[in-house]
Image (cartoon, rainbow, N blue to C red; front, side, top):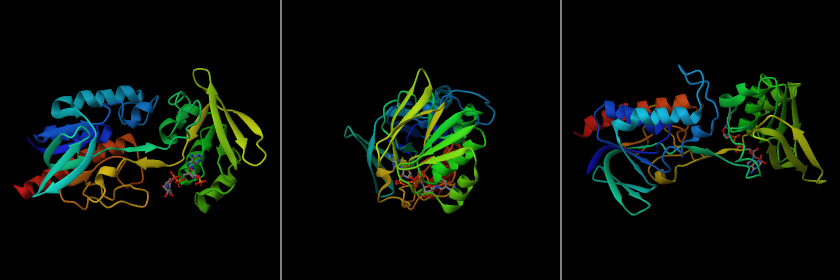
Length: 305
Ligand code: NAP
């Protein structure tokens, strides 16, 4: 069996690509690592910034995506372990040793937020623990929240939240912030942002939803309890791009360098969603990437006919 396009990843970008591939009458296969449970968006309690749908849970929305895309492509569960290209045909190998051939590939394997790995983080994800202020900040209007991290993401999340929340505690493991000076100046000018450095977060507690955060000072070991309604964790992301190594150029953070058309350095290999180097990683930009990639796939298929 030779597919026109194989889509690795069944999150928002992959499902959008599947829908557009079906509409383009392409023979398409989606390979999902964990079915929809692998999609980042299911961790978002409520999505309120997806155009046309004012309020929906991430789980419900991605289920709708799946339902909409289901008849447009074949779906299989598995983990792609390698991709090779020979005589213009790609071969994907799965972890069970099986092989799939395709004329083109769209990699949409996403990026995962780094986890603190502390008690309560997993339990309260979607119920006070968030990895995206743009997605969830509006739920904390007038409330007190903490942001963990010291890079640009943490600083921009803290600034964003300071316009919504009563108080924002910026908690970092070192005394120096890694984020840009420009962000640091803005942070310093905000009366409702309080920076605490040189501390380690130990635990997030709550009863059904987050109510407090515990940390200790690295020097004197003094333990502190902060009463907060939300904890935003912004300690970097890891793109799932291992299978593209050697096939696509990546930036220093491991994101694949490609424009909106998804084209990589290997002809016929495209990337969509959070693994692509871009400014805004959101549901709506992932969906857009999936559609754009299929347009590029069609253009490429026409050149090899
Ligand atoms: P980052 O620059 O890698 O910063 C991650 C932060 O999290 C660091 O402060 C790090 O501490 C901390 N951290 C990492 N692991 C931790 C752990 N286990 N426990 C506690 N803290 C931990 O990541 P990022 O902030 O997501 O930024 C990624 C890239 O995107 C950067 O190039 C950034 O400039 C860019 N970005 C740009 C903008 C913008 O310009 N508007 C906005 C967002 C992001 P240490 O400092 O101690 O290492």
